Image (cartoon, rainbow over all chains, first blue to last red):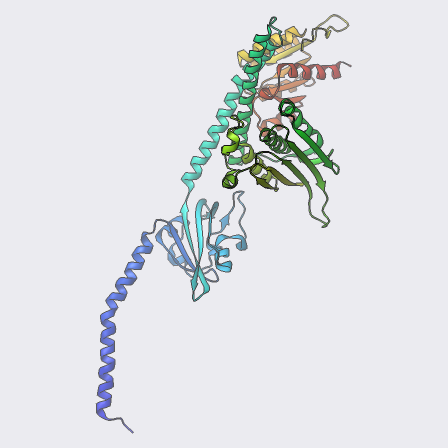
Length: 391
Length: 139
């Protein structure tokens, strides 16, 4: 049965009107799309959007430039294959460890400047990367990678570190000179001295020693930043190293009447570890406790070499230095391991520190694959624990 | 500290000879004077080339060698020294301010007694080290 001709005409008119309206809106849709495209193209960083499985949806012009691929070549491919992530040692980072993976699978927003991308032509370029998940309807449906070329910044960092290294080496020669001439004079090898003259020379010697230590600290900082420090293990007598550090501080310990208790457990005479590193760690932590504990205070040094119960895991060296000194103020806890930082409450006690000690201790601990922790309360005391894996 | 009591004369009343090779005059002089006071017969050279010539003609019992020197540097001098029959056996003590791992490895590969970083060692410590070394080889 046919519908009434009027119905048919009315239906046609309705549809025509809808089509016309749609056509009127088309320019607006196109304008919006152009606007989005213009925005995407103008973003000052590389941008790549992907589906949940890592297949690329789009890439902006800077991404094309940065990675050496045309957008057309990228779309549809998995970003895990188009631009591999390379770590500081030149090794490819496995997919599950990539920032974009964490965004896709755990909804995390990850920012990092530690990696490089491998371009289409094989070149590796350092980037600052931020990966964020795309969430629609409460579910992760994809991810966005935004990245910026940081070659220039890396270059500057490198130049800085090389300068520190060069200057530090240059400074050592005049410092050695002062050291040796003063030593000969102070020992009266070049003629007798009166008490006052000896005292003055001793002060020169002490100041020189401080300079030598400062240069040594700076050299270590530059080595860490340039990645030129090679961890070398050998058999080290840990107990002796700890006692050496205490010996060097004897004058201050005696003057402040500090109570030092030491406990060494396990076989510590023949531990396989980097000698320079363990010496630096012990030296710095013990010196800090001695400097920042008031007269009559207590310092406890505990070192153990633990063989774990789990078969196959590495033996560990656990170093604990505890004091009932001035403690680290709450507001300074976050910054305590940063370069050149010194908390206000200890600057009053000792004007001399470089602010590099804890930065170096933490950096070297982590270089060995170890961990460092601390507990502290202002005016109650501080305990530092360092755990180092042993070969 | 004054160890003038230590008698260094050997049975034939010959003093022990040491050679110091160091390009920094100020360091060379203070080392030279020190070893002289300690009773050694001391030779000095300011670069690798001079040092090599002096070593081969005077045959010291021990050589104190700096690494960073103009012209022929310490490691190059050491390499050439070890090519000589006598030079291959003479004890060498490296005294440098470089704490470069690579240099240390190469120096050790050419048989050095020890590698001392100048700014970490006192004058007396260096002398002590030399005396220790020669004591061992004299007996």
